Image 1 (cartoon, rainbow, N blue to C red):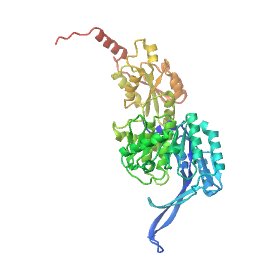
Image 2 (spheres, one colour):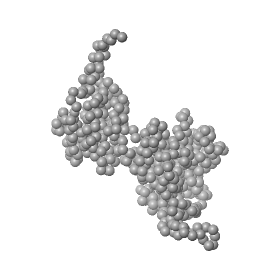
Image 3 (cartoon, rainbow, N blue to C red):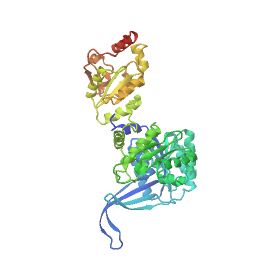
Image 4 (cartoon, one colour):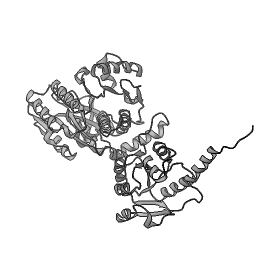
Amino acid sequence: MSPAPFAHALFENAHILVVGDLMLDRFRYGSVSRISPEAPVPVLHIMREEKMLGGAGNVLANIVSLGGHAGLIAAIGADEAGRLCSELMVGKGGDPAFLVECPYRPTTLKTRFISGSQQLLRCDEENSTPLPEAIEDQIVAHFDRVIDYYDVVALSDYGKGMLTDRILRHVISRSRELGKPVIVDPKRRDFSAYAGATVIKPNRSELAAFSGLLCDDLASSEVAAALAMEVTGAAILLTLSEEGMALFRPGHDVAHLHATATEVYDVSGAGDTALAIFCAGVASGLEMADAALIANAGAGAVVRKLGTAVLSSTELAHAVAELDDTAGDAQPSIFGAVCTPEEAFTVVRAWKREGLRVGFTNGCFDIVHAGHIHTLRQARACCDRLVVGLNSDASVSRLKGPARPVQNEASRATVLSAMDVVDLVVMFDTDTPLSLIELLLPTELIKGADYREDQVIGADVVKAHGGRVHLIDLLPGLSTTAAITRIRQGTENPVRVDV
């Protein structure tokens, strides 16, 4: 399956509520050509400036860039930085009404001075004292008002005073009541404040600070993670910088996901990107290990960028595709080609948005023979992406009789999905694939030349939407029914061989 539309299609229905420390990231770029005569420091000639959402805002920006939906609840100051954060949120599709203005403290502002690709200095303007009770009241009210709309809650803790004890307790307990996963990017030394969360995503130094262990290798990290799991009841997704990530869960083996970055330009915001991708994966129904896999790939891709960068769905898809190419059998691909009609709809729609020709053919494929391979190759030649509709076991039995299929639907789907010419396999339970064709609206409908065009199911639907019908030649003398008959005759009348 081509990776290009994968991430956007996957995250299209993911809704994540981000709660945490919002900041404004300012980057001032220039060049250094001399040392100051006043002190032994470089003189930076400023040439341009960029401002973007940082902290919890960068988590939101990454989710939106990947095709997901996100809301952000945070506190800002009554200042220019807060006003800019509100404007930038609107540009990301967020609702600035969830930003609570606190007149007693400034919006956190981080200014980085950069020459070429080298960061020279960072200046922070902030007040990290806990929020006053009146602001807490507004945060809690906002959360209770909107939580029903979201699938997953992301807590982005930068230690700037937003996630107070009260807010943490309320958000985690209310989310648990509603059955919504809570994913935490922690900053506190005492992880017990996050007790009840679903997953905690510390880095190595944060886990070491909590546990009192060095965490300088996987073995010591596993001991520290076990302590964290015991205290919090949460799974631990440990980020290991150049060594990738490790996922620790009770009752599971450690999943060590190796780093993918070959070049590192800037780690600013890489943790936000990883949190965003992991949350979007969980919200989309991925297994935790698969969500961690793509989060690791995304973090490896974003550190190749300069600044608090966000990752696009195409960039993430290619990062995961590169991981599949290099991992061999060590890690399974998450691009499983077998999907539901609903999943296929989102992928096919993304393909068509990219201007790709999407082909569709169908069959039972009970025992795959040379005729099937010939047909599928010809079908793939008619399009850029090929979707194969596969009759379910119940559908095959109705069409072919109670003795069929010989192989169950899972086996048949696995065989088809392993073929290079097949991009998606979609099961359908009806006698014909008409409803599936109406849902997917492929641009190319492909059938064997033993049919006339007016006999092809769905031909009128595809042509009415500007698509084409292709009738392809079949190899003569090849039939699944005939093959099964020969096999059964051989079983019922075995040939006696004297040895």
